[in-house]
Image (cartoon, rainbow over the protein chains, first blue to last red):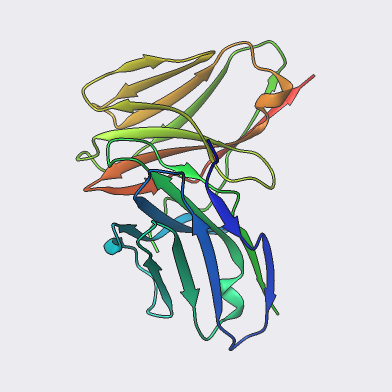
Length: 112
Length: 110
């Protein structure tokens, strides 16, 4: 069974640009969550989608948004990029709320 | 964003010894706990989980202990191997949101 797939693996952008990251969950998983990981702040929850609806949201500004498609694939978008947005963005999927999340290997975003 | 702390504790263990990684969680309403292992360049990998109605759960070479009285979680790794070198995260679920601890870096000395 294929794991969680995130594309692209690496991305370099400049301040003010916007970026879209993609995540394909494990087949059959309808819940997709996004996290930001930085050395200073650790793993921080961005949002969770379930059946195309945002179910939970972390404490990030409105520049961070996401969506989920009918096939459970998800995208997250960051607009007006700032230097502090440089991070590893991780996507995780799970079968039910009582099951552990399974992570992809992330997209490494660097802002110049 | 939500996070627990900034400092990454480190643990060095001799190959073959047992490792114990500790985690203090924050919310007494947390009902589900998970341990993850993250190797360099990869995403966190699920190791073992435990629900709040249990105090111990065993897997292959790993044991998780939960002490709800003091809000403490530990991961024990038996016969630690070089491949166990990684950062280990505990996570707690509170009202359907998963919150991660800062992680512990485990180094295995051959």
